Image 1 (cartoon, rainbow, N blue to C red):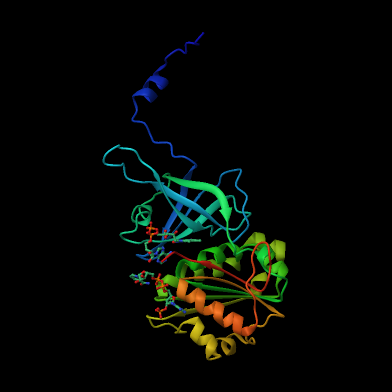
Image 2 (cartoon, helix red, strand yellow):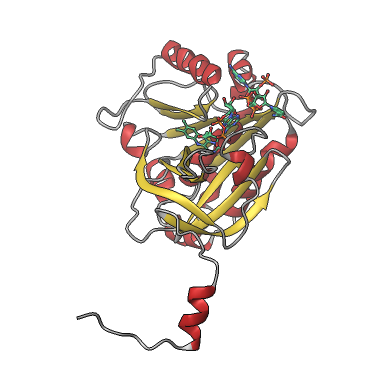
Length: 287
Ligand SMILES: Cc1cc2nc3c(=O)[nH]c(=O)nc-3n(C[C@H](O)[C@H](O)[C@H](O)COP(=O)(O)OP(=O)(O)OC[C@H]3O[C@@H](n4cnc5c(N)ncnc54)[C@H](O)[C@@H]3O)c2cc1C
Ligand SMILES: NC(=O)c1ccc[n+]([C@@H]2O[C@H](COP(=O)([O-])OP(=O)(O)OC[C@H]3O[C@@H](n4cnc5c(N)ncnc54)[C@H](OP(=O)(O)O)[C@@H]3O)[C@@H](O)[C@H]2O)c1
């Protein structure tokens, strides 16, 4: 027998209200910040069942436009590095705005309270497990390739496992460095990390931002600055070697390939989750 529910004013009003679409795997946007006309970051609620390792990526997106014939909508998903650390209650993402990009032409307009589709299946190679123990950890990023390192820079294991952490970030313009610079500055007053790792843990970090098109204190591609020896002199460290150095790379394809070749020349070998070695690589985007 079907149970009859009394219709009160509230349920009647609910039935009349326009239906809000409930997205599959929906999470809610809690914070949005625009850094430049090409870059923004945002935070969303975290599914309670989602476990991930700092440095991994997930698929996120929005519903696509209705099919002109059937009117049906399909999720439009893209890979995104989780920029927040594994212990954070929420998830953070750092995103490009491609003006004619299927996803980011829409995603750039999201606001607090909006819904985001988030497939809770994290994967990726930029994880501590894929590296053998070492003394010095290098992060090499171009553009939004900084995102996985925004996670790993807030991960306690990064400082527990290494004496020194060097982060290089190469962008065209100064404004594109801001998200990373602000994040690194915020570590100085991060209560949790200072308490957990020890007051002043952030002194282990050496930050090396460079620009290639707009004037800044350090200009040039990191690859060229390493080849000339300038980067090592500036940082006060020797070139990478397999004994002491471990590295993670996240940038455009040409950058990744160039650095890979340089590392092989230094005698470093590429690792994977199942076979930890000296360095790991991930594409910041597909070309
Ligand atoms: C493993 C992985 C992790 C990723 N993590 C991030 C991330 O954390 N943040 C992020 O913004 N993007 C990330 N991307 C790229 C992302 O998946 C999308 O490509 C991006 O959101 C643009 O989507 P779109 O549909 O608007 O355009 P798309 O059709 O996907 O891309 C259109 C074109 O825009 C350019 N482009 C795409 N993404 C970028 C980018 N990030 N930086 C510069 N140029 C780009 C490329 O030339 C590309 O061909 C990642 C990609 C991969 C493979
Ligand atoms: N960034 C912008 O202001 C801007 C504006 C409009 C459109 N776009 C378009 O957006 C797309 C992505 O641009 P992006 O700037 O985000 O990413 P990008 O082209 O991958 O460049 C990011 C940084 O990586 C450097 N780089 C590129 N290849 C390298 C290599 N092999 N070794 C070392 N460094 C390398 C670049 O230096 P170089 O400058 O020397 O290449 C730049 O400083 C491009 O198609 C671009 O045309 C970018």
